[in-house]
Image 1 (cartoon, rainbow, N blue to C red):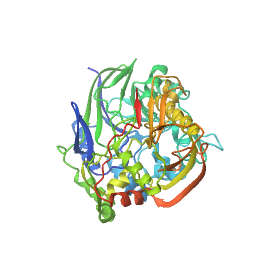
Image 2: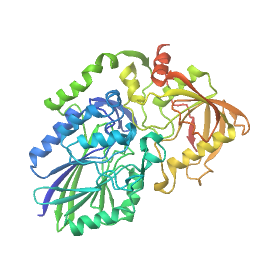
Image 3: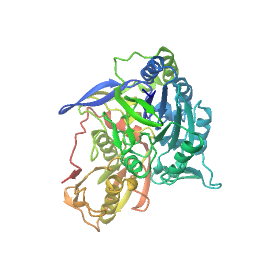
Image 4: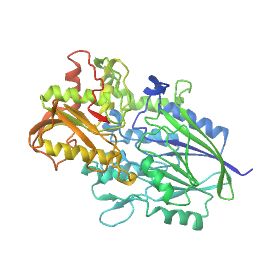
Length: 479
């Protein structure tokens, strides 16, 4: 018969405490439905624990305390009582470092469960910032849990995220920790809680023996069926807290001999947990009046569910183009940001789109630099070696048109490049508007100017002009 254990996963909830709009695919079309909410997630966790006492473990793969207005305003602190009440068994991290490593360490010490990372080191001492693993005991099983934080924090994120620390991929460290858990701790099951991203984690599972279960994060994949790589089961469960992954495992002689998986949509059928609902309301209530204000209307459904271009980012680009009158505009290819259905747009929606609320800037950049920048971005997104993939989606563009062969070698993907409807002139100088100061990296361009207008202000100004449309334009096209 073997021993039974249930593993529950949340990943990439991005600060979405309450139910919100989510895009769900239905055959050939998208549907916008209400999903998520920590109070509903609490109900799911409690129901599983009540049904299988002592045999349930719950893990959070990170991107938890950043991404919404209350998260950013409290620098993650408002989430601690709620997360403790959810009683996770361990987590790892990515955007948690947005408040600086010192602040995140402070947050981690306030949690009732460990933050784990085998790949996050102190620059001066070389020591790990967080414990690499923990051992969780269930009714009949010892479960070794290893954490791997996002490796990109010190590579493509703002420098403040990684001040005084550095990250490795974790692939070299992982075998030693697995051996220690198996041979010295005598665990029955090895679980890796990771925020590397699904392509990276598939490669990791192929290279490293001994991982029974890999809980994946970062890339917002909705895996309705697990990926099985050798002896390793991999799941990932969407984003925004709209989904919870559940695995019911049978373990015999320190091996998984059977499993059942369910990607649970956190929808209206799940009643909210009253206690967690009260905690969430306590966080949200001071901000309700400010966030609920309607600031405009969209005729286009706004989302970030497409890789090459997205309607939500087109709205951002239209706003900064309108403000600056620049030749073109760029924004980061963020994955997070709850969809907005056609109709009213609230201030809360704007903060969900761009919670960092950076000041808009402009830069002068040559055509030659633009091509190099976009080739670099395409390589970071579509690198053949998953370990070289370093970001979210393709950089969002307006005022340009790129036609690309994504399967081509690095630096040779762009087939045609147009600016303002004309073929890109390598020697011409173009003025670009930027939603964040990293949208054209510092090594490109000159005469940068930071404007005294934030992204939220620019969006409100643009929306105040009347109903907006932000349809897909074919800015980046795979051919």
